[in-house]
Image 1 (cartoon, rainbow, N blue to C red):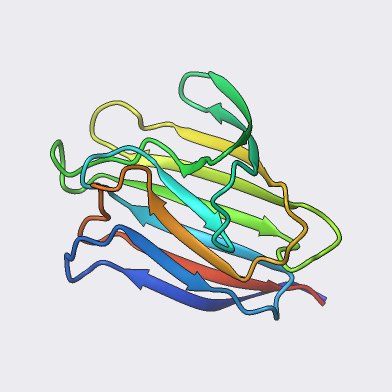
Image 2 (image 1 turned 45 degrees about the vertical axis):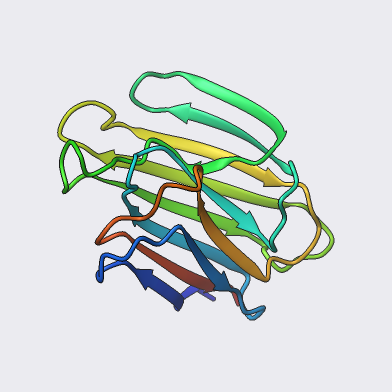
Length: 170
């Protein structure tokens, strides 16, 4: 049968507080996860994703920049899943938009594969899409996800938003 999307949780920063980390508990009732982000940072850099409070260098990835054609490959480190996040100093209406798919997130017999598609809504420069393929080198089921600033003095700005969906496949 067809797959169904169900909202699991959401967070928004409409009250304009200086939030550095956003945490979600993930139920074990879906096949896949999809994270949708509209984010802006106080200083515009990158946002890390952490699964199950894993602080080790357990990610590998491959990035392709759709604007420049540049690519990068990295192994065994903590990685920014959303890159080139705008800050409000140049234009308060600029955001990074990302869709992050986590396949078979509750499987305990394989490492986790993650796909990222993102683009920046900017008035100057950095407007193109980026694509990432990531591996979390763990066979643990994902039970929690944190969105973390790449610098402890940075924070999510007003109107940042993160939505998490569960995908059921019958």
